[in-house]
Length: 535
Image 1 (cartoon, rainbow, N blue to C red):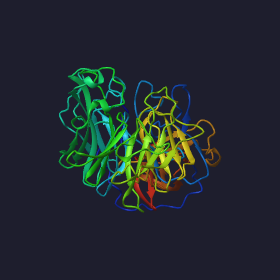
Image 2: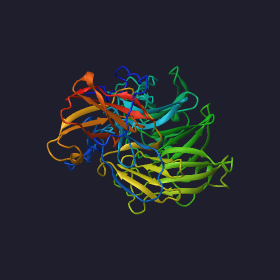
Image 3: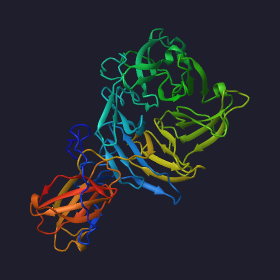
């Protein structure tokens, strides 16, 4: 676990107040020079190249990026990395990055599932799942037990959402909180949608098992964020037969229950819930009473009739409904269509969108809207994944257990792609591209050091070898830093301003400098100062 300092801590120290007055600033000084100071480390065949800094101990991956000249959507990439026996990355943490490889924010070390920006009422927040009882890479691969953490736009921890349903877990697994890794969506009703896995007994004779066999009942939950009480709980075991599953049955017991349904997404749709089952290849619309209103089946279409060519799906993730503005009787249903359940299969995973008519009518079957994938370099993802529309009409695909991200244009043309770990190594359950504005409560981090060889700033540094390195983990809107230096803390004077150059900015300092401080400037005013550093 990273040892957090005041420049990186999240929810662990008292906030530093925003400066109550504007600090006088000067125009950029001709005597100050600045450059992006990140370094790329690539000294391991097993670990993807990563970025390092002087003023921060964060080590995000250095994305390998390919792009065209076509327009990309605005926003930052939210990548929640996961830990296993072969992570393929230097640091497993949630990271916010730009689409040209600059770090914005790095969070606590450890698993972070479904990392994203969303709204809690009027507040723009970030959230992610962290595990307290996760066994996601052994017999319980693909499930977890933990909590959802919600942070505000100053990176204060607002709430740890701890679902407590008194679930029965496999023998040997203990946990304080029951939320599963898959869904953590905050609704407009001040609730959060969560998934959870309960070990239950069920009749498995129709599958060739025992009458009192053991299964996972993967539950959909809506939880009130104020009271921490469930307002909706839906159990698939109470409504469906286990023999509908496509998951091969090889036996079950208390310590290794059969995962026949495998819930992996929930969406609130009016007074209904869209619930996706990976192992049934089905998505259900369920009312508040728990009754199934309709379902769509990835093989035969279910209530909707025959699926179009290239419109079938299997082992799918992230089912999402969207309205069609031109027709109130139609909706768009999108998936990250894995279309495989094995690391040895080669079916390309697809960004699938179907146009549905409501209520379902087999005489008016679904129509294919999108079947996006990279035809030159197709990716086959056996688990996880995301497919999300972006504000400019593009869509973003995160390839789950494969370390790739791709942005497609409205017609499916590939415009941008990135890789953040070696093939079959690093992974991120979902990847989002979203707008995010934040001013951290903690101070910028400043380090002063001497260079022993020529660097990018040597020509403008004169005879001085002193360099400052400043970063502010999570700050999104810093334009410049004002540099203060002097012979003592009581004699600090402004040397001028430097432009922010990426996550960490390196800048020159005059020879003989004894103390240094910087102030971060947003919208023309200084909003937070670093500590005073003695050289």
